[in-house]
Length: 440
Image (cartoon, rainbow, N blue to C red; front, side):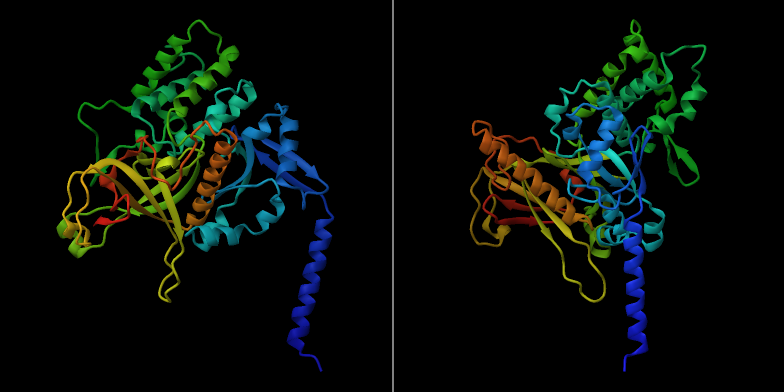
């Protein structure tokens, strides 16, 4: 005699399978968005099983882009809490069915946040496309797409730039979208109302101290500098028709962004421990700094999310890394951690043996390494991306043995271009041979 409950569960499974089979035979309507807010609409008979690379080809054909666009762009699922690049064999319909589980696995978002953060399918720059090849892109449509994506990252505060570069980019953007500066048509109030579309928030929101807005002494308002930047760029291109110079202006905007190490990166959210004073440390644990971890084909960059400030950029030739997923201890669920170990410019002059706890002295002039812990639910994704980027570089070096592409994990590079503000981190210090010198 069968159990009624088991029969009911079996019946529900059969009904669900039948519904999925029925839906799988129906056409699917989907939209692939572009960073200029346009959408490419498709009505696909095989939408449930279409692969990402197949859909990418359809978008490129529909937009009339040249064949090389397949190397420059890829499809992403983008949401306020998680971005995922789709591999060629991924099926977007299947990924979207698992989206809630992916967000629960790779973010700290609550159920309501996951429910409200609907992802969109987006055509974006492929994180594996090398920056040194992008400089040869000449197609205006491709430059336009790259420009809009870079502009999005600037305005969203993901790209931490020098102040003068924010104004330079705002001036170029104004020339593209508002036309040449004119005293009759462009007034200060217009620039003030447009700040959110041209600048990241930290550039125009004044600091507040209790009930009062605090401005730096002799600081000028952002809208004044914005108007000046627009006027200056308009004079620079005064002899050109803007409509016929768009590809030049897109490239000029990108040229500024290309100078930064994080350009073209995939961005992951995380946090790092921040040092505190000696006495505060006795009472309170070290505070955390919310950061972006930006990873591209060249390096790993850490950016302060709150201040939009570049803290650290490590080329792969200076980097060794490790992913760790701590065990669940029953009381809480500690986030995974990505360890980043890197060479620093300083060298040891002389260190006594007791400092290392080894009883042996450390030779003078020995190179030092620092260890940074990045806590993030996305640490596993970061680890996989770094490994893929490094493996690709190793493969390139094997194909071109005369070019030193990367020596990840082997601290033997003579190049020392680690950009850093190390005082902003809690770091452990090691010798090249692995002796611990200091733990903060």
